[in-house]
Length: 167
Image 1 (tube, one colour):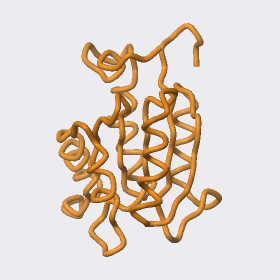
Image 2: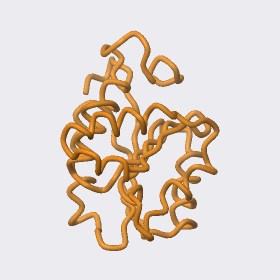
Image 3: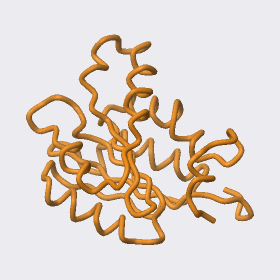
Image 4: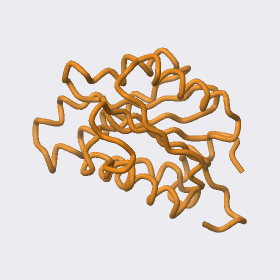
């Protein structure tokens, strides 16, 4: 990461009853990807509990040093998958196209199963939030296919760096 370039300060939240930071391959992938171009400030784990999720996210959203939050887990269709319901009330604006584009890109590798993904993204207090599935493949797809270029000041004319006041 070049200190003269603008970059995001990112926090990652693993949401799972079964995974921990030590065995979370998706979280490890995100940490490494973020560190290659941005500043990873924090990585935590919480169980699939609405109030624990909201407590951590609310603290991060209120922290002016954090520009981006990426969660992994809880976006599926199972009974424990509660991430969208927990996080949507915290958002000031939804990025509706994120979930749509993610499912479109995912279709090539997993077919119609992608319809079960309820990944979401939005903005809360000038903080970008991306909620990804827990699978490593899904996190790679979201990061490489969408998020990395949207956080890269050189990638395209209209990206999130240009929309937010980040330095």
